[in-house]
Image 1 (cartoon, rainbow, N blue to C red):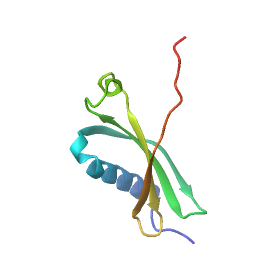
Image 2 (image 1 turned 90 degrees about the vertical axis):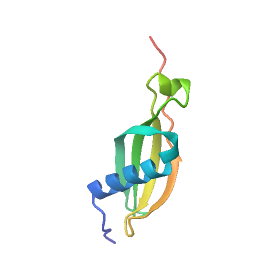
Image 3 (image 1 turned 45 degrees about the vertical axis):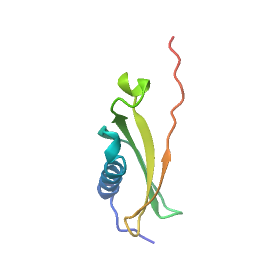
Image 4 (image 1 turned 135 degrees about the vertical axis):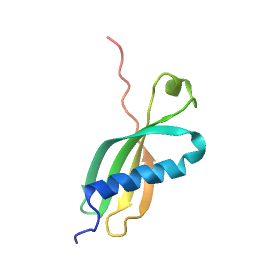
Length: 92
């Protein structure tokens, strides 16, 4: 079944939803990191990173939070969100 959302609509939905959900946490600088359409589930998985201004030492030093927003391709509704952890990179 062909969905109704295009890539740009999925990205905009994810960004807008995250900014609304985290509005009381002073998030800023949302950035698209990854996007893919899961054809089997008819859902977009959009990874957005953002800064959480001053909430932790990592944030103070420029760390970003990564969230994967899952959007139903047929309805355009957000159906879930998960945290995306990145592997630690050790200095050489």
